[in-house]
Amino acid sequence: MRKHNDGHVVFSGLRMVFGAGFAISAGLAITPAQALEDKPGEKDALRTCEQKLCEVVLKKEAAGGDIACEVGKTWAQNKLKEGSEKRKLSWAFGDARCGVNFTLPRETMLSALSKPTHTLEFKPETAKCEIEREKEVTTVSVTLQPKIAFKDGKADKVWLNVTTIDAPTVIKGAIWTAAQIEDTFGVFHAELIGEINELVHEKCAKKYGAK
Image 1 (cartoon, rainbow, N blue to C red):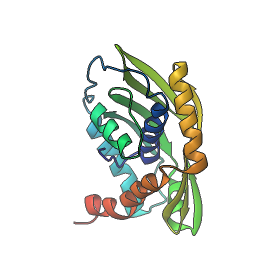
Image 2: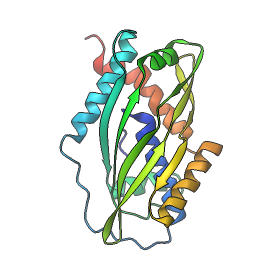
Image 3: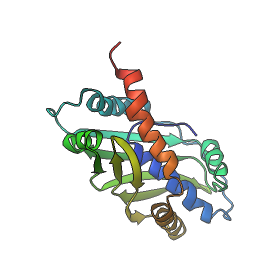
Image 4: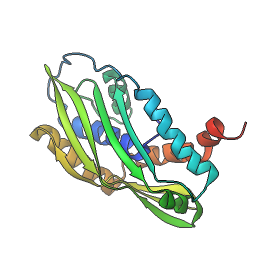
């Protein structure tokens, strides 16, 4: 599955919850109606958000506003299926697309990077998603309030904290069950934590550091 290094908890978390949750209803026979194409400007918005986050990571300046992003991500069916199979799961649907607006307080982010221990908490965010199933595209809304526990400047634990799901019953039940399993047992936490630390401690400097 392609990695994305912006809005890490929101997008990586949703990808993992969907991948695990929909596996529960994998017995459904699904034939995608049509492919979901990447929206125009999708990659540029992700890159801009990443740059905002990395600027705070690299400069560590207290002055300046909070980090606000409006981003979206489209995953092809084969990529979702491939990623699920690596975890002994099944992806029973077609393509998927999610979009979300999120804000991250600058002070909280700097504290997470500088203090011995600190928990970075997002405000509640609602991701709007489109999921291909049978002959239609189903709209799904997932509200979550992720938080990341940092230790010595590195992500150590992650919670997705899904609070509300607006979706057809079979999908809602699957996502909710998967979210509870994830936050209780941390099935995919290692991957998510690895992506966060890779961005903060490697990719930011490599892509946006002093040349």
